Length: 216
Image (cartoon, rainbow, N blue to C red; front, side, top):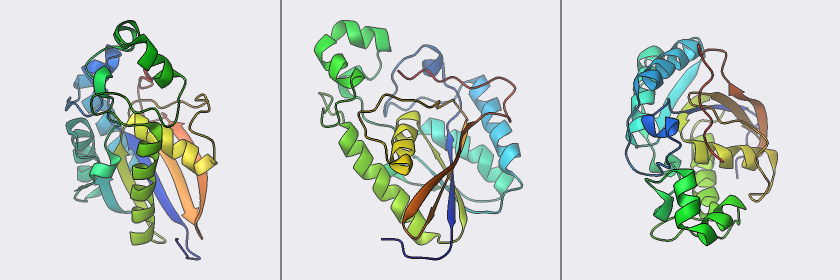
């Protein structure tokens, strides 16, 4: 439990665009780097956040988030700390396939995935939404505990942000998504006395073109 009269603000940034995002190919924990557009998006996010009083920078340890975090680090003058709990969901049999290919090749499994069945574990090393929720929640609580009253940036992935939005708003994992998760989008949440709040979501004013949201 986080007991504090101070408000902790966490800015969560989705990594910049990759070629697989453009192809609507499921990356999961396959280590894909940013494309040219993604690098430019990361630079734009870095400039946008430069004036914020950020005291710590965290990132998933996958390449596309590390590359994004490196741009933010230069602007914020901070060294990124890598946290595997903010990695993308493990998508098992779907990793490396497009969404259409996944649906065609594994129709029963894809239906459970598409319907957001919380306890459905994707075969061949995948995670369920509930498993993802538990690790993301633990990661957020750890940061909030370690940085009470401070402002922190976390660079992460679309699947993780899907969980964060639901956690903060108190929405069930099975509820259809009603929010955007664009590449290099900026999202602000805060916590005070163990109560989470959504400040803003999917900010893209820093981008020349709105980042992709290729997720189903």
